Length: 172
Picture 1 (cartoon, one colour):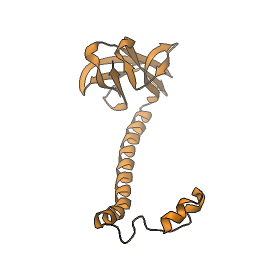
Picture 2 (cartoon, helix red, strand yellow):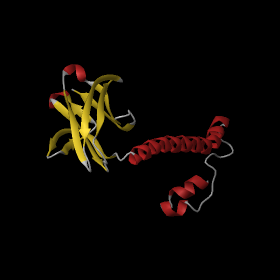
Picture 3 (tube, one colour):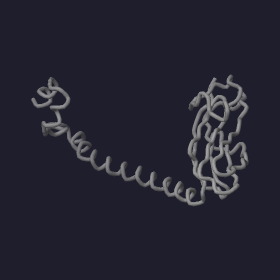
Picture 4 (cartoon, one colour):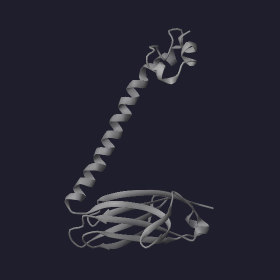
């Protein structure tokens, strides 16, 4: 059987072998799934490329306005405006967390917003001033027991265009 012969060969040699992922005697559902797999990969790749293109268009639009988000993240603390212990899961016992954002290519004074969402409900919006040519800023959230669960922070420009979305969770 072809599958057994390939099992003992080094990985590099298997690329030269040609065999069907489903033998002719396989059940009909398995053969149909094998035939649809390439179609599903093309569909998913096309969807991902479209989503990436939309995000890139938004970035290009903000770059033309002179506002480029160079770095962003959620962290436990800040040291000299640098994030310390960036993560996606934080313990409520941490007490507080920070949303850090660093902007380059700032042409003129403007504002950005850190919009904090808990379970997809806007809980707070922080207005932050940005100054040329480069500016780092942050906002902070004090953690309470009721804050457990999924969170996200949308970083937006003055017109409301989303520059980045940072997702994280608060746990015990």
